[in-house]
Length: 349
Image 1 (cartoon, one colour):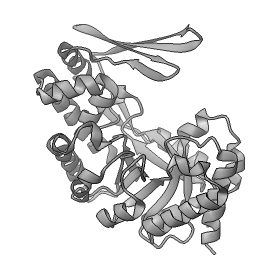
Image 2 (cartoon, one colour):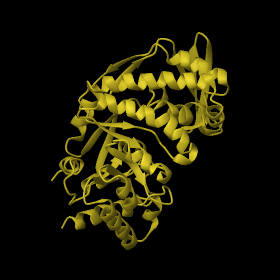
Image 3 (cartoon, rainbow, N blue to C red):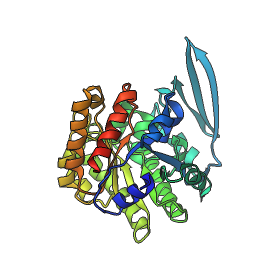
Image 4 (cartoon, rainbow, N blue to C red):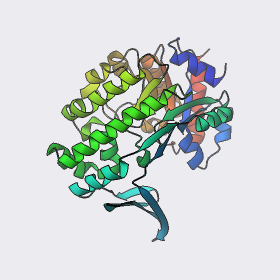
C-alpha cells in the first residue's frame, strides 16, 4: 500500500497497521543528504504550499543581501508612505525585529491595510503531481510573515516584535498593538474564506506555540476566540485544520480539547514538550497526531531507539497518528532514520 493511501486511511480514523513516517519538504530542499535512499526505504514527504495570493497596495518590500564576517546578511525593509520598518538576518536567523517601538505597530497596520486576498490552486496542483503517492500536500495561508502564516498574536510575537517587546506591550494592552491584532485577525478570517475555494483538504497554521511564552490567560483571551471564528468558517467543509504546536502544552490541554482541531502538528514529547503520546491521547482522543520523535532518541542505540518508537506507536494508537521529521534532521540520520522505518515495517507484520 502506498504512503499516501496509508496516510489517508490513518486520517480517516482506520486502525494504523503500518505507521507512516514523513519529512517536511523544507528539510528535503535545504539539507544535503541522501534523501532518495531514505525515500526508497519508505520515508514519505509532507509538502507545504501557498493557497493564497496577497496584494498589499500600501507596502513595498526591499531585500538586500551582503556578507558580514563570513556570514550571509539579509536586510529587509518594509516601506510605506508613513514610515519604514527594518529587520535583518544572519545565515537565515532573525537578528533584529521590525517592531521596536509602539509607533511601529501603527506603521505595520498601515502596511497591511487594504489587502486583497485571492485563492490559488497552482502550487497545490504542482505539489500533488510531484509527490504522487509518496506523501501529502498541506496548504497554508502563506510561508512568510508578509503573508501572515499564523494567527495575529503568534505572528506578531514570533515574527514581528519578539518575545520581550511583545510581552511588555500585551500586558500593558498597548492600543497600537491591539489595533494590529484586530486587523490581522480580520484578514485571517478572510483568508480562510478564500481557502474554502481551493482543492486542498489539509490546512496548517504555523502557530509554533509553547505556552511558556504567553501563559494560559493570554491564550484564552486572544487565541481561543480567533480559533472559534476560524472553525465557524470551516464548518461543514471538507477542510482539516492542523496547528503546529511543538512545545509545552499541558496547562492548556483542556482548552485545546474544547477546540475541534483535526490535528496537532509536530507534537513532541518530553523534554522538548511536556506530554507523552499516551497523555496527549487521553486529552485529545479524536485528534490526529503528527508526532515528532524527541531528537535525543536518535542518539540512542538502534535497539533503544526502536523501543522508543514502538512505545510511542502503542501510546498514540490505535488510530489517527503518524511520525515525522519536522523540527530538525537528526545528525545520525544515516542509521537512525532507517532504524525507525525498519521498526515501523516490522510492526506491520
